[in-house]
Image (cartoon, rainbow, N blue to C red; front, side, top):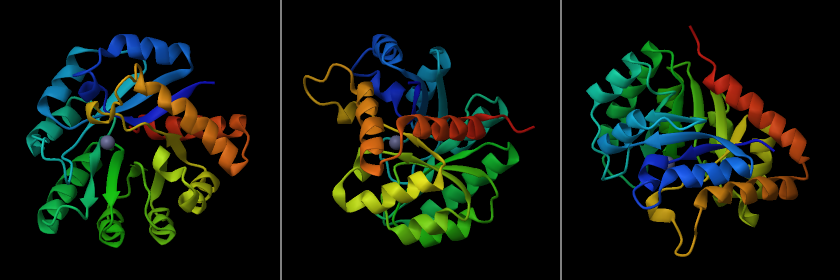
Length: 244
Ligand SMILES: [Zn+2]
């Protein structure tokens, strides 16, 4: 197998566990590529100073994360310098009551992505209709991270050029319909969404959780592992190919 962790926070994780040995072990077990999301100045700094084999990073102003200290000019600079593979994670989150600010900062970042022809990593908790109304004005490649909302919301987002990351959250019995819909849609990666906040005590390498998510997806949907891996590879190549 050659797996891709389609959404993780590696610089953030590095605060509590030294990253290089974790990546080496993950690679040896078949997890070879990582799309890391940076949400603070120090996480960006980390990624700029440490190039790890197989790791690309994105950056964005998150709709609902208090520690996010990024400003629009920093996102713009990273785009200008082609240092990020995508803008994000950005989006809308129903747990932040200030919807006007969320919409404004989302639109400004989508404009940056459009100007530089970069994909966008989306964080969408609720507000699917409002998000869709904004996103449809920007014909970009979208990676919707850890989507766990309604099937109606999923179908709406599928009108965009959208791919999804499959997390542990939709391997539960009540989310089987959504998991199957994502797999039939055919554009997906798996993810851990790992941060330093989610590491369990006694857990030596949380990156390895991805192996279980992959195996369970095949078990639950009945789709062969080889077929799932092919869809994963096609999705990754399409998302990361550089558009002139
Ligand atoms: Zn995340």
